[in-house]
Image 1 (cartoon, rainbow, N blue to C red):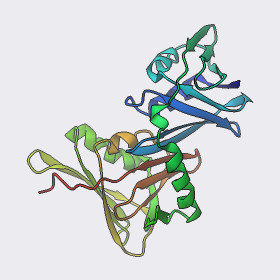
Image 2: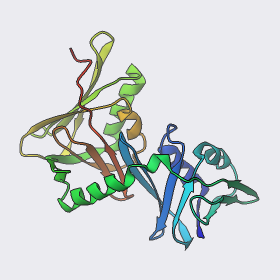
Image 3: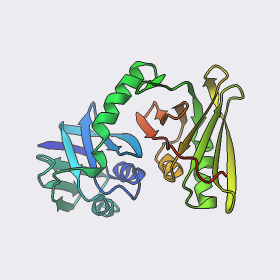
Length: 254
């Protein structure tokens, strides 16, 4: 039976970081870390927090909203147990306990295996190639700069398209969103240690782009991108990795 103990507040922050649209989650333990991953057609996100492992393995949460509600109060330590993903999930927090049914399939993890194999190949190429396509640019952003992208969503609301332009010669990333008929917004972000040989690359991303960026922790973020390839954000100290798949359309900029 997989069994581990984590800090309740840290676990709550981790689950909330996956966003309200994620209804279930697969978790795995290893090297004193608890890692949750989501792999969908739109994005891949991996987050980790420290944990005390009694028996390593995997667990599946079938109802994230109910677990989030359970974590709103109680003792600092939370103990999680599960015999297998399809079996009952046991959570104990101080004097409170909750038992939840297991799941036969974790919907939010459906493409994670394929994506992770491609990520291993990308890492082995020193983050310069994704599925045979060049990832020609990289650099370092701060979470403060990323908040400016998130703010686009706060100002303009839902947008079907976010265009990211990387000007390596100028060491800057330009993000633009909106429509001519409703208003546009532009954000220019300075990039440290910009690499890409003085090139210019552009990619398009969907409406969830700024919302996904909220999951990233504080501190420096290494970003990798290229022409019509996914954009990858890595927070090396925590092991967090967010990859957002690019879109093929350019509507809204007529």
